[in-house]
Image (cartoon, rainbow, N blue to C red):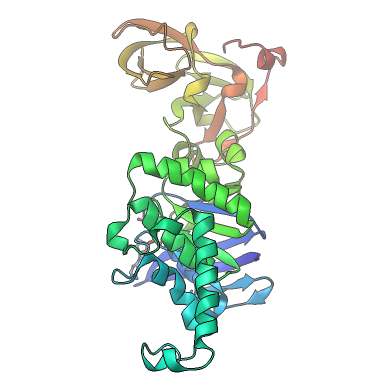
Length: 383
Ligand SMILES: Nc1ncnc2c1ncn2[C@@H]1O[C@H](COP(=O)(O)OP(=O)(O)OP(=O)(O)O)[C@@H](O)[C@H]1O
């Protein structure tokens, strides 16, 4: 299996910089998600790793060897596309067998009539059959091998595409939004399947998605890309809890993190919507932005108040949308207990613990904070 190293990768299309110098190391056996909004360059980066697109500058190393200039098929990486790129006229069996036949049979042996007469072809076909059936067994598609792609569901087609990638025993699997054609329920199911497949294969997976929930639920690490740059990489928990940039904070998490306008005073204190937080920082005085995740907003007490403008009760949890009084800000609170929801249009007091606050400067970079009273971190006290 493979370690993949990207150094200073740059790419432009028609004079527009799409990748602006990407440095990233993917360890052997990791499940890495490249995540970011549409157009941020994640598919282009994946295609450069695969060798399907040349970079303008920078290097790709696989297992310590430079692969630039090596054609895609010789890189021994398997790519699973959004469209799965299955041959519609071939059965699932033959689709999975294609890479094996290409590799193990000579051009003459692959001829339909003449090839069958050649000595040794039968034994090779028997081995190919055994290998395809073993993979199909692993993916739970053995009963479907005779069907053509048009007779399979989206999820089954996806497994055939993964099977076709697996038979090649690649150094790494590259996935380009493989679940985006599936309906919402199947997507959730396939997430669990892919994570399970990764645990079983222990292979390196590089997975491109614009869906932060997919990235959060499957990956060992997430690399967040924006505007052609890789702005933060880390475990899902680290990315969620300790975003280094406001764009990461806002992209990861649903509902989105609440952002309120704040001001850093000369003495390092922080004011938000007329209230002074029990926090301080060493940053220069000026405007800042305060981020608080919806699950950290506490309703019923606190220095702020808002009127309920929308309620989303999902049964197991609820989202309460508040228009913050005296400002144009909106806040969403996530409630785990749906039995006592505030009424629509009612006025609700709210607050948050000091350690729930993530602060960003005017340029969006994270500012480290000091919580003034340490005991407040342990108690669910408000600001
Ligand atoms: N072959 C190409 N020629 C010109 N521009 C391209 C080409 N391929 C990609 N681009 C442009 O490069 C940028 C990055 O594209 P890319 O497909 O890598 O984005 P992405 O992050 O994968 O987006 P999405 O989630 O929408 O697929 C986009 O602005 C896109 O229009």
